[in-house]
Length: 113
Ligand code: HEC
Image (cartoon, rainbow, N blue to C red; front, side, top):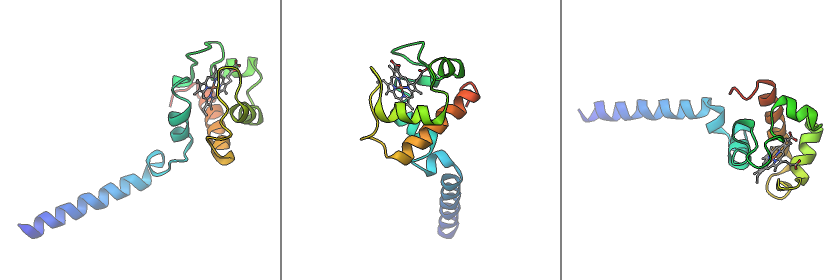
């Protein structure tokens, strides 16, 4: 019985490690979705904007407001704008680039995961 229990525990452990490694959002603190959820989703849930509705992260608004290129999103996120905080001291430049690409990818998919 004891051997069976140890064997079961080992299997569970191996499966958990495997799931953890194969799931990019869990495996990396630096994935676009993880950075977005931790830093941006509070004001931009599902690509919206709870402070200024028209300045959301959907494709149409990004185009209208000229933040539809990765360079422009990076510069906005780095420097902040009006009620949006600057991220240059909270995220490193690589994280800012990753989350900016994530925003544009999600906008292209209309924020459907
Ligand atoms: C405290 C709330 C808040 C947080 C947190 C926040 N934003 Fe914003 N965001 C805003 C506001 C307000 C604006 C509108 C700025 C303006 O006046 O143009 C905005 C605008 C934007 C825009 C331009 C949207 C448009 O249509 O013009 C992008 C892109 C953006 N945010 C991305 C991000 C990203 C990426 C993060 C996380 C790293 C983030 N924001 C975190 C409040 C926030």
